[in-house]
Image (cartoon, rainbow, N blue to C red; front, side, top):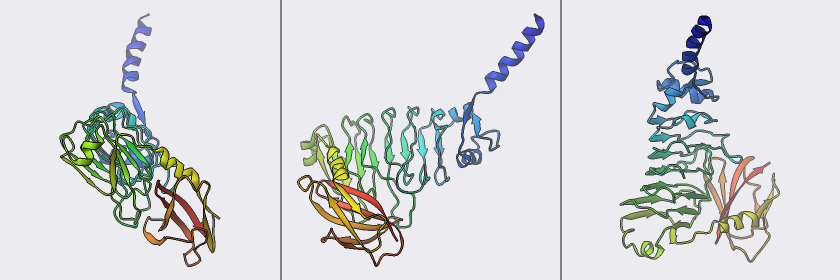
Length: 313
């Protein structure tokens, strides 16, 4: 009996100390080691969970992280910077994910150029600043492709950066109680977005009266009490570019001519740098002068934009 007792009191502390968080991405763990967060200092696919819960500011920018598994144990983080990480790849679908649902104290989030097209911040009710942008220069290879951002459960948000997002159409800012607000929906890609900002009182917001008299918005936008992302889905389902791959000519196919009006096609290189604008003859766009490689074709309509990745051979 005594022998069993000694075995138990020896084993229990070991199991208590063995609580770990799995970090399968070696670049993620390497950054944690370099920051002094992973206290064993070894790249072994795991850290102590107590190391994760002790962190309040987490800077993972430019760390080459592909998989953010394990980040859910960083429950006390207030500032999270994941800027410029190729989550699940560099460009085009499928896009990656970052689960921040457990970070209930999060106040600042930067996921610039992190290969995401969605982020769920509904559990981050203390959030004040959020950046989902792409970079300002043309040689970036890792891009976000957000259509919308729902901040209706984040009443304290006072800063939203959605810069250089080709297909961005909607920000839900209902229930906002911040004393001031700055929003950036501009882009340098020669692509005109008219972003719908959903608010509780769109008339007061449009007229710049309280409580919206301290709001500053850069870019093309309008206020509404109902923003319908279904319009963006309409554009996505209604237009298609073919053939792909292409060599000489490509065409823009429109299934329903009553749903949206095709206005222009922007051609960008694989880094997002503007090449040319097509304003007519959408059924026979000459691409023979383009070098071989991948390009982004942005279909612009009066109801929103759609981007397709086209290979030129």
